[in-house]
Image (cartoon, rainbow, N blue to C red):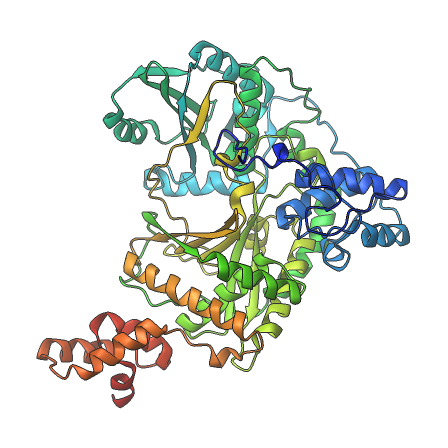
Length: 605
């Protein structure tokens, strides 16, 4: 019987260790010196694995961008060496990494200092932008910057103990006692010694939960602390719905994980070590002269990368783009077959890259095919915790990397894969620059119908940043993430890929003011079509990659043989064709698929 966690996931820590063989099937080899011993301990902590050999590959053990950043921070702190992430790709085993570390010079590690106590503290660039957007949009923005989470709890829950645990969390993390104010024209944050707060409790029937959640999630007043609320709904004696909501200006995805993990520890009366620093210390550090100088060096890279005319992604949409950006959204999910994922991993391993980079590259090919553009920009979120002192602190640290690539039809896919890989590694090495600071340095036309810089984001392995993956271990209680409709889309499209237990799942959040679900569903089919082609032919030219699947070709042939075409259909296709005349044949096939005209008919016209 395979042991499971309270969330229903495989509990790897409870699994017996296979004798003599490591996690990746490589024969186990113990560390041979002090540096290797330190690296083994770091890998075990970051990867959550009990035994690591010096020949094990970091990425085959489950390492990815977030964990790579965490590991680099730990190495810097414990060994005094500033390790570029690209060196981890070149030296993915402990033995290789130890040799590299011995050859480089020491880069002195500096802790984030404690700032002096004051009535007000400076804000970070992320907080400044969120505050500006909230005030610019006003009521129209609504709850788009709220971070609501809902759990279903089964078992003998003690609501008083839960309330005490929540109060301890508010005392522990200053972010949960912070408000924001304008002093003249300067935005500042105020940390309150105490915050008036209480857990709201009520009883309800199960069919009422949807309406209760919708009522619970409401706008925050940023000048009033705490920017956090919680509510417990009793459905039965051992059945509760637990809701929490925080504003993004004081929290992010990793903060939510910290919140739930520490809440479960406080509930069972565990003691937590004191926090050496708080978010205000990080904010003061980000505003320090030393940090600004470091950031300016990295800014040069981004200004070079984003020089010239910046592309605006022009995807064919189902509806005309509204003059002001709409935030209503929906989610479409799909899955890659396990056997296809296995083949993709083999290809990725042979090309010495990662699943994230391969999936991102395929996504860029899809966008290029749909838009007919070669210059493609995609955003990808990053935890933003580039210093190991920040790992246990609640606050908004998340940053977004801007990934720009030129996709030429004469490119082979494997060559493009290498180009994207180098771009991602370069971006990670310059990840200290907040996206808000970068946007302020660029000369961008204000367009209230779009996001600045990019309209789509791609993320991978969000399981490390999803609150439903937090360790919620409370005896006799079962915590299950309660799915609810958030209906918010900050971008035209946000693609999330997550690997779990040999399966690859995609979640596409899309703006319903632009796209129908049928369009997103078709894009998912075409994404899989591209993926399967590059697995079979990694050296295929981009110009040779086809969007139309075999099933769609069959449908087109069937439609082609149906010669009865009414006047309305002829009129429709004529109007559509005139509007899309500059598109490529592949794009036309996508656009006209819904009206039943075939590729051959389009060519005739």
